[in-house]
Amino acid sequence: MTAAARDDGHPLVVVGAGVMGTGITTLALAHGVPVTLVDLDRAVLDRAEIAIARNLRTAALLGALPPDTPTGRLDAMTDLASALSGSVAVAVVEAVTEDPATKADVLARVSAAVPDGTPLISNTSSIPIDELAAAVVRPADLLGTHFMNPAYLITTVEVIPGPRTAPDVVAAATKFLGELRRTPIVVRDSPGFVTSRLLHPMINDAARLVEEGVASIEDVDALMQGCLGHPTGPLRTADLIGIDNLVDALDVLHLRTGDERSRPCGLLLAKVRDGHHGRKSGRGFYDYEEALP
Image (cartoon, rainbow, N blue to C red; front, side, top):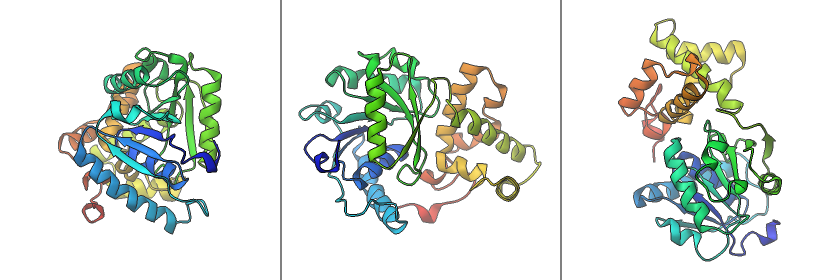
């Protein structure tokens, strides 16, 4: 798909207007791709539109927008069936909460409504793609991605074909990511893939050290930054991921691998229970109240 063909009525459909859905939408719009963003909650869509405008300004200030590319058209809709009717989508990205049953339900409804060969992309940090493929009409069309947050700034994307994913779907998705100036790295399907399998237990360990009183939140992050070169520290990273999403992903890893390092520690569970989910809620390991729109 060339830049000239992007605004021809063939949008990218993104289902889920949370942090990752808005980030992926921002990325596509910045590269001139029209996007239909779908969420059941109109208030969530309204907040997403504000966040997307802010994200585009941030990307421009940081020099992350491609030169001489008009911003793509954004349509925000609450009805999935309407969003999938009419024009053929370039692809459909499912970016709902990191819950296997919720993702499977959305993917089942999408796959029943789109033509054969439409790439169905589940953006997931932990759930095996072949597990989700059991819910779709055509497993060959299903592919996983793991965009990092913020998707419009981080340029590498983990790409996960399932065992039943068709090679041409992988080729189409990696080509599209290249047109978005992203570097796709294809890995084998497994729980947590590469990045989450390494990162999430480490964040869990960092939270456990705080819980045990070994070091403060700030000192854990400072040591990981200053001694080991971690760019933000694991606990700031948890706030960026969303502690609720992190716990969901750890649960998936623990249940599917048996790794006790992936069993969410008490401090993470308490933060989820108290609604302290990180940047998106205004408070996690750190406070972000002033950053909220």
